[in-house]
Image (tube, rainbow, N blue to C red; front, side, top):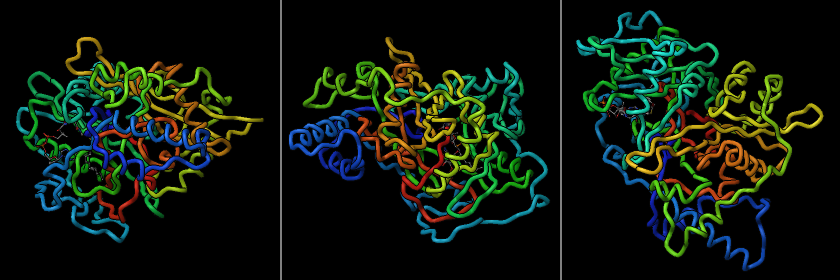
Length: 454
Ligand code: MYA
């Protein structure tokens, strides 16, 4: 769900997945042959098939195709941006347009007269509160408006203040008369590898317009102004994700959900008890071990060079990844309570494996009993000396036992599909689309993606 989002992909709910869909799902993602739960006995296979069917039915139907997914849909804004058209079959790789800084407009784009641009200072409590409140009330919701992301203040500082961040890229719009914050869009610097190219670009996130100002074409102005500010720094490409389909996704990924608290998830409408199953059975399926099965410990600062090394080597297997230096690894991976957790497996001073997840709750809209859905999202993981399902079961244990979360969410990026079914993740009803601005490249499979944005 929520993550991702979203409509940035994410969430939720209800059953009624038909048999064809269930079967298709099982065919799409097969468990890794070497996993711990594999067995050849007919009874065990049957039991496993039943479990997988229940998990698939319990969670999240597929979204309907919307009008905008029609390749002939006219996109007034996007059809005039340096991105491939929806019906374009891209076979080449590289920039779509090339400009120089002296060609960039010097003046900010003009807003309606009652609004003004403002650069947020996220070290300032009042500015951080303003951003938190805007997003908390107006950011991404699921299609049925049952859940809305609740990015915490410390999360926003983590997500938006990596090394070399720029305040002028924490762009917002205020009402001139009372200074109320009503819209925002953010960029942070990032070096990204796409296929064989390493490109200095930005990651765009937190595009948000106050609900009362929607459909007035403010979003294109925000996008054009952040583009101008990024171009002024001689940067011409961007990476971003969204639940919506616009010209043109590089990849389409799906969220998977591992329930820890099925009773709560059913009470809030995030999931449901499938036909032929019971709540008791769902609770049984959702159990996680009491203790981790392998010795792993929270990452500390001195681990950063080794974490950087094993992660960088692992990411070489994929086609769309970040390139991180040691300072960036410290920022993105050192544990921060209820924001980011990273655990490493170390033997004789050598770090071989890691898992990490970030913590992001969602508001449960209009539910008297539950106010928050407490979720974690798989971030970057490396399994060199243990099987994927063993490593990630330990992540589940820590998220459930230490962080007391309701659900563990995971995209089918990188090698994640190898452990999803074995660890009893079920498919979500939303897709997260990956994009590149001003960079064309051939479409990728979900497992080619090695990038996780918040
Ligand atoms: S994804 C999260 C997006 N945020 C939300 O979903 C929060 C809730 N929704 C809202 O706040 C509003 O509905 C938003 C649209 C702000 C989304 N990405 O102003 P409008 C196009 C890109 O009348 P509104 C994230 O943060 C739409 O197709 N474009 O619409 C990554 C249409 O264009 P066209 C989008 O509903 C953001 C136009 O906007 C999105 O009032 C990456 C309509 O404008 C979307 N998610 O506001 C941004 N949604 O007519 C791109 C709608 O052509 C970055 N639209 O179809 C590009 C790179 C920039 C930097 C480049 C540097 C080199």
